Image (cartoon, rainbow, N blue to C red; front, side, top):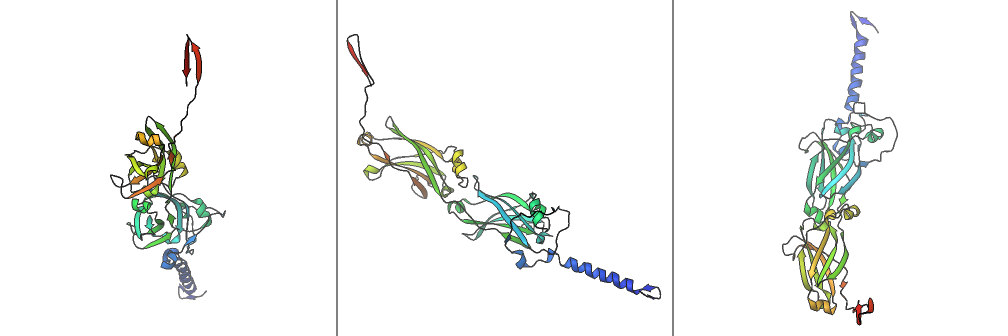
Length: 324
């Protein structure tokens, strides 16, 4: 160090150099993530056990990763895609709006979006990824889907987006999760059939996402022994079946898939012992003859059994008394 008059030259240069060093550290923050880095697909399991991060603690500003994981995704009974996930990245700095978007991979269009208002605490994520606000990177939301997307069994991708735009458009960093395929199974069971006073009484359940846009439910009886001649049809109101919903949680009408029905049969159908087919049909048409999805149950054989039994025989007051 030396003095030129009253000026300490070395001290001034040191302060200037220190200012340059601090400026360089700031320039390396994640605020300058490139578009290519923003769309990096890096899904990580959170398992490491290190010191937890809090919202106000320091974070590694040089980390340019885009981290996320899909913890749970399912179609609930209200026709919503229910998702529980997390998404953490330094690119979220200065992008305070967090949006979730349901994108239909089949039709190539957005179905719905919702803004995350209440983040879910994820200290497990913060222990693994020392990035901006990782401790509050979780979310649990429901995204409404269209009946057409459910009926057609489309593939739906959930997009997690941090953006500076309040409407969720532009200046964004996205994470695209793996597509979710909607369940297209057609499940049903005929639990009971009986013939009482010329009436065929049937009961069971029928659950399928293929009926998401088909509100009418018909039961139809055909006479298989007579070239599938229709004997009758009835419009039924479904009943609650929580047991079915527990087995098929991804089918939206499973919780109300139960049915019962009664059909009056002609005498000649009963006397011949014809074989009948019961059909459960969901349809969008008033008469049930178009835009429908069917489930054909196993044939019901009326049979021609001739059965009897003599239960009791005895003599009383010089009379033969029989019952059976």
